[in-house]
Image (cartoon, rainbow, N blue to C red; front, side, top):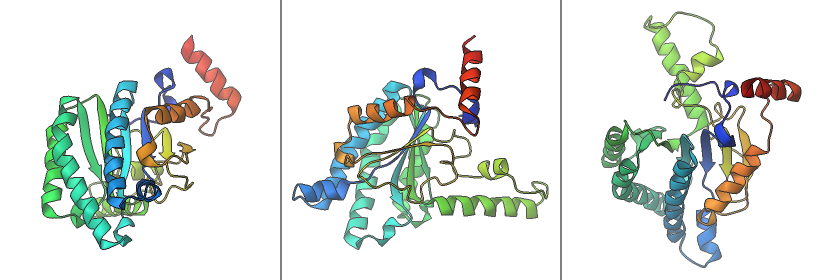
Length: 257
């Protein structure tokens, strides 16, 4: 998918091209039902399946899901172990369905911390689906926005030292070109479930002009109607990207002529 400046694109029918989601609330959902937290995470996987399918049907081009942050290693060891197992099981079970439905799978984050067999599955899944075009599903695993930006700067430094790029002032486009999402449009809509209202080190650079949507709904209860509500909120907003409201109205009118 070619890199695109979102500020110059009209989203067809008001549907966001790129939706990014922090899937929060699995553990609390289970606790509220007096169930083990593990069952909350398994219920969350079912929600992922529904939301991916709904995004594909709605014409969303990119869906990025925050599956495991670089800070999640601080959780209890048994829960981290469960998440790794669930991650591998889900990948093994769902990859052929994703491929059949034309969904391209990508992973962003420092995968070197994962077990070797899981890293291999991630690489194989990306290769299997690389030519699919219905929807790009990006899984952020062992990902952090600070890591992403630092890694981009290191790549730039290394390329300058090797003479691959000219010594020049670092500008936003140069940084964007070296982020893990360099060939994807920045998110139009960010959703966080579970009642918290923060971005938690997720896509820090990429969210600069993203519309933010927070809901108290816990992730396992977040369904197609919930997503439609979020998209409906997005459609009612005027995205100005530093312009005035009148400028955006005039620009929209010009495109419609």
